[in-house]
Structures are given as C-alpha cells and as structure tokens.
Length: 47
Image 1 (cartoon, helix red, strand yellow):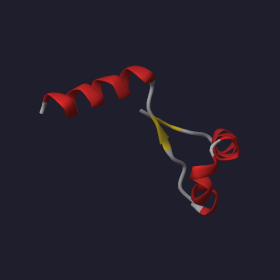
Image 2 (tube, helix red, strand yellow):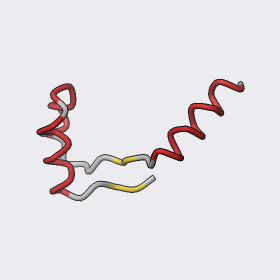
Image 3 (cartoon, one colour):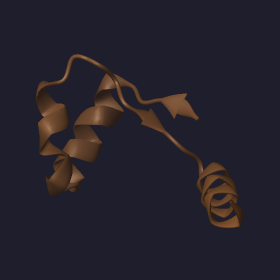
C-alpha cells in the first residue's frame, strides 16, 4: 500500500468519474498493488 502523489491523484480523478468527490479532499488517497488486493480479497473470502 502506498500514497498517491498529487499528480497521480488528479490523473485518477480524471479517469474515474465515480471518484469525483476526491477532487475536493485535502488528503492524498492510498493505492494497493495488484498483489495486495488479491491477498486482501482472499483473506476476506477465507473468513
């Protein structure tokens, strides 16, 4: 897991309409790598 830069945040908001509310947030969002998402998903399914 890592934090996006301000430039990366703007690019994600421009490409993903459903994340428009992030535009006004002062916080930089976190991002997951593909491996982390898979591990998190599998951990949820196994429980």
